[in-house]
Length: 252
Image 1 (cartoon, rainbow, N blue to C red):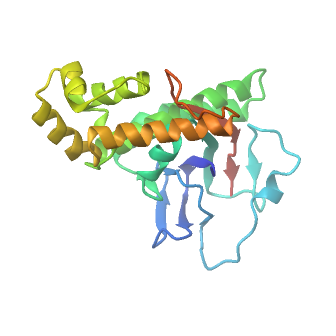
Image 2: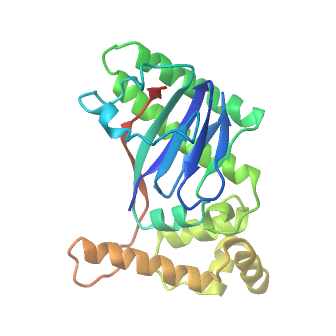
């Protein structure tokens, strides 16, 4: 799976254009954006300028360091690149738009401390600064997802987690995927009637409880096969991990 990026504009303004995602988006100081699908993208003050491969600017630089493009300028962006692992990763990324653009003042306030702290760590070459930056990037990624969920009324298991009953049912399925769940047993688990639970689950998740359970088991079985288990049986317990591969701040 391609990696995901979460980035903030800490000074200046620039445009971002994501391949296959429609019109470019103007980013202003304080804006944060999440690119969950790993699609090719361009960031520029002027999109009419010819593209330049960012990788060559980072050659020879250590992870967690500031890199200047074209000698530096009025625009500074800080961000990190993530690789999501686990059976839920594909499901998570699949329900997110190509660009998650967080621009409200409340969102900016929530993320400002973390990005300010990241900038300080990158500016001061102190022992352990990259470890601190990694942890900050993890926190920013999770918080960006939370803010996106708070802003919209999407359909999918991630959005449904905030619902007391449906979220509890999804947690039970993830906790014990091999259990012989039925709609009735899941409804009993979360304290709802069978019909009310089935209707609520379908409304929020987009699939029925058993369809969701089947899809989750198939994802677990695929992971087991990829790890060399010929039975392809889902484990008794499962989860999803995320790993920050590298921080990629720049000043342009």
